[in-house]
Image 1 (cartoon, rainbow, N blue to C red):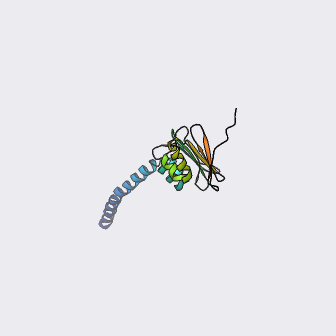
Image 2 (image 1 turned 120 degrees about the horizontal axis):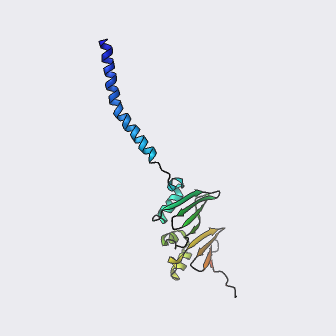
Image 3 (image 1 turned 135 degrees about the vertical axis):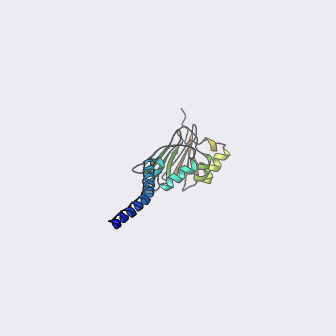
Amino acid sequence: MLKMHHNLQSLMIKLKSIRLPLLTLMLIAVIGFSSCGHSPWDEMPVTVSNFVDKYFNEGTIAEATHTESGFVVVIKNGAQIIFDSEDQWVSIDGRGETLPQMLLTDQLPAKVTDYLRAMEILDGVYMIQRSNGILRINLADSYFTYNYSTDILTYPEVKPS
């Protein structure tokens, strides 16, 4: 009987020593699971999140959505960026705001940025789109295109009214 009492006491001491770390682990798990709120950053592919962080790091992500053809990121009170299935941007629309100059100098061909600098409108680009080898650059009240294969800038024809 004395031996059984001693074994029971040993077991109780072991349980008490396990209880504190076990409770600590349980508390950490509960806090961890409750803080796992949904974040738009969680939805983004790494390439997309790196791009958004580099060029739009001052904005808050309003939406990040997978689409049939890629991914769309919307910055609250700012740009909407459309990426293709290979996580390359297809369209960046400032939605009334100009696009960051660093984005333009990093992402556009030198001929385009040289032209924008020469015309002193590098800070006046509102949207860029690329499709089928053509880049479209939207300014406040006009646009021009750049052909990647011919390296030519083109302006739309103005039709007389």
